[in-house]
Picture: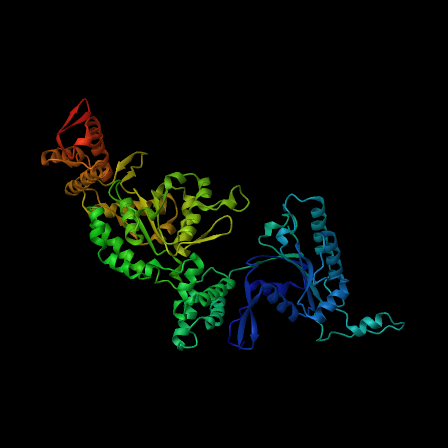
Length: 635
C-alpha cells in the first residue's frame, strides 16, 4: 500500500488487534463466511478466506500458530506448514491423523486451559462452527453446561503472557539464575492467547455466557463497504472475458458497475459473480447482466428484448382499450414503464440498480380500473395477464400476519418455511407484483416495504434473500375518496362530477396525510416518490363504452360455449345503459354487478328454458322487472 492508499482492514480486525492485551476471548459474529481483503504487496490487496485474514493479523502480532476446532472434524493446525504444525503439535501434545484430531468438549476445555497458560509461543484457538456446539443454547445438557461454565471461568482466570525467549527458558532450569533481558523488539508486550468463537449470531451461545463480562469481547463482521467492493472489483474484472482488449475507460466503468450493483452483497458474492461471468461468457461490458444472473438466477432478460420496446410504443392504445377513461393514468404508467425498460429507475442515485424496475401507486375510486391496468401491464410485458403476483393486503391487517407474507423471524415457529412474497419473487423474479388495498395492511408490515423500495431485496427467516430488482411493484389504494370529518364519521372527499384536477389534488393530499400523520411513516411516501397515479371517476360517456365492452364479452362467451349468436337490439341496449349507469359511484365494477343482476342472470334463465340444439341465433325481445326481479324474453 502507498501512503495515500486507503486502509481497507475491516474494523473488527482492527478491534481484535487493539483488544488482544485486555481480552482473553472474542465472540465473532455476522458475515463470518465472507472473504477478506488483505495486503498482497505494497501496492495492492487480494481476496482471502476469513481464516487467512485472521491469521495474517495475528501473525503480525507475533503469533506462531492457530488451532482450529470444529464439532465435525476436531482440531487441526493452521496454517498447514510443517514447521508450524510441528510446533503446535509438540506444545499441545496433539495426535493428528491426516492433519486432524477428533476431540470432545471435555478434551477441548483441557486444550483451552493449556493454550491460555502456554508461554513457549503465542497461539490462538479458533472455534469454528461454534453455533453448533450446543443443540439448544438456553437448554444445555449437563456436558454442554460444564463446557460453557469452564470456558467462562477460563475467560476470567487467563492472564496475558509474554513468550519466554529460548535462552531464558533454558536458563530457568540451570542452577545459576540468569537475568531475563529487558524489553526486546523481538517480543511484543503481554497479550492473551485468545479463544475466538465464530458464530452466525451471538444468541447461538448461551445468553449468560458473555453477559456483563469484561474479558469477552463481541466483534461483528459487517458487509463490505463501497471502497472494499471497489477494490475487490478492480481485481476481479480482470477475469471477465474481453478485459484484455478493453480500453482503460471500459475497464474503469466495469469496476464501477460491479461495485455499485453489488451493494449489500459479500466479497465472496463478487467472486462468484465473476465465476458466473466466465462460465457463461458474459463480457466486461455485461457486468450488470452477471450480477442479475447471480441474484435472480436468470440469464435471459425480458426487459432488454426488442419486442418489448415495440409493444410499449403502441401501449397507450392497448391500455385505453381495456381501461377506459383513464388517459392521465395510462400516460403516467407508460412513462414509468419506459423508464423501467431503459434501466433508468433510480438513475439519480449512485447505487440505484438494485431497486425494483418500477414502482406504481394506483389511487382513486373503486372500480375504475386500477387492478385491470395492472393485469394489462402484465399482459403487455410478459404476454400473460395471469403472470402477475397479487396480494390482498386486507388479509394482512394484523401484525402477526407479516410472518405469512415475509417469513417468521429466526427462532419463531414456521421461520424455516419462508414467506409467500419472498418465495414468489424467487420463483418468478421477472414479474408484476400487485399489493391490493395497501392502506389496509398493518403499519409494521408496511415498514418492510421500505427495504424493498430502497434496496430491492428482502431476507426471510431462513436467511434466503429475494431480489426485487427485476420486478414492477404496484400498490393500489382507495385513500382520499372518503375521509374522517374529525367526529368519527366518514364523509365523501371527492365525488363523480369533480374535475380530474380536483380529484387528483384531494386524493394526493389524503395519501400524504395518511402516511405522514396517521401512520407516522412519511419515509414510505418518500420512497414511492412521484409514482402516484390518480384515477378519475367513471363519467357517463365512459360508462357507455364500458357497458358496450361487457355486452360484447357476453355475446362472445355465448358463441364460444353454445355456438349461438346473441342479438341485442338498440332499444334493449339503451334500456341496459339506463339501468346499469344510474349510479357510477362503484365504477366499472358496479356496472358489471348491475348488468349481472338485470341481464345476465335472467338471460341464463331464459336460455335454460330453450332448446338450444336447434338454434343458431337468439334475439333479446324485452327486459322486464316485477317485484325487483328481472326477466328476459327471447326470440
